[in-house]
Image (cartoon, rainbow, N blue to C red; front, side):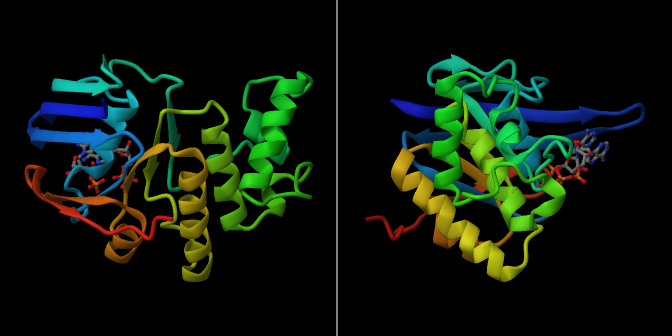
Length: 223
Ligand code: ADP
Ligand code: ADP
């Protein structure tokens, strides 16, 4: 079955004196284990679309179904990664990853340790965010998103704030995570090279109002 099914999605923002029609009749099916990127000019509605899928914006019309269930609230089946990683500065790396789960539970600590290995942050368990580079912080954010074993990972320009070198490493790391976990991923980027490198299909949005212009299949360097 489909991981995500979007049918006739329309989204407008209503302000005091105007209405902005941002997403127009979006139809999209994301298969299980697929990595799908969304590209398009600034302001075309990429972030808005991702927020709707995340359940962070439920003011839309049309149908958005995740694993057959209508999306009407944020839930644990989804992991969301933003451009700015939003780590808690007062918590160590391992406590940031555990989020609100107690580390004193052996199964929580085991999962955190496993994720720290996955994102290659061994030795930094007790470090604080200010001691980490941008790429390392983003890896913590990815580990935190994976903590709840989400069915779908949503990434909004996850590497946009990183230098080119770190970005390359992170792209490889994300592919590794995908190979190991087979998590369905949906991500927004404005970097066409990143989209080609990292996705099985590219959805191109047109602006004003945001509409799917084309869907491009890509040959991923899958194992
Ligand atoms: P993108 O991520 O593709 O750059 P966004 O989804 O952030 O685009 O925004 C799409 C359009 O919706 C833009 O024109 C933006 O100004 C508008 N928009 C986004 N959020 C709001 C909001 N809360 N209220 C009004 N307009 C908004
Ligand atoms: P991003 O590109 O990362 O989505 P933005 O700067 O577009 O960030 O938006 C930051 C926040 O401001 C978002 O919560 C978005 O919904 C809101 N926003 C964006 N455009 C508008 C707008 N025209 N009016 C009101 N809020 C907006």
